[in-house]
Amino acid sequence: MDAPTTEPSTAPSISSSSSTASSAPTVPELPDAPYPVAEPKERVAGDELALHDWKLPGDPKIARRAVVLVPRHLTKKERVPLLVLLHGLAETVDEEMGAYAWVKRYGVAEGYAHLRAPATITREGLGKMASDERCVEVRDELSKSPFRGMVVACPYTPNIWKTGPNVEWAIDAHTQWIFDVLLPRLYSETPALAGPEHLGVDGVSLGGYASLGVGVRRAQELGSIGCVQAAISVAEAPSWAARIEKAFAAGARPLHLMTSTLDVFRKPVEALDAALSARKVPHDFRLAIGPHDQPFLRGPGSVEMLLWHARQLG
Image (cartoon, rainbow, N blue to C red):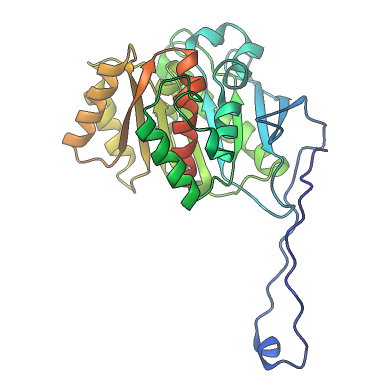
């Protein structure tokens, strides 16, 4: 077990003769948060996260594996939000490569470490793909409201355009696996807060398309929905906006669209931003600096994504 070592602070006791003590309601003590029993494969994010490699029930064409990053910096009773991340097309060719994509290729652990140590968020620290002004903004925000952390789950994502009869079938199947297989284990074995308001989903490229698909299917069971450089087309933008509007009819959810200056999907993501704005669907849009590649994700991509979800999930 790789449980946290920091004990919560204990308030000084109050004498039983105190009128304040006798009239105060009894507050039940919170139980310790659960942690995986197995030892982690390794520690990442400057020792802040324990990496667990889970093999789960499932169709090998859809998903049966996930890398799970569990904070090591929490107190025993502390719980944090949960973010599910879907990877891109290149890593769909191999189950292990896909499950490890966000850690080994996209730099999500480095992004987490940056948010835990805001002084490292500089233009140079983000691969020279962020302005000095934006770095100052992020550091100032974190000084006022520090990043508490989150559990990050990175499941294998299938090639949704080639798995099964069609893309909608593939996203249906993957969404069901996430909610019926992956999430129950995450809630029982990690310090993830339960409840829709604490659950987010995001993805990059193919994974961004898939995360939008998960979002429109389970909007009311999610606290935040995002996509990074989503692999949609300009022609699809109006239909995606209509689907999102319909999914939000029972209550809008925080929605984040992120693209970048040299992203090959910049125009489609901007078209989706415009289509959502025309329908008055609330959402956030960010145009970051950089291309559609792994160095971008290891620079500002992961930092901006994690920070946005942390602010929405609370």
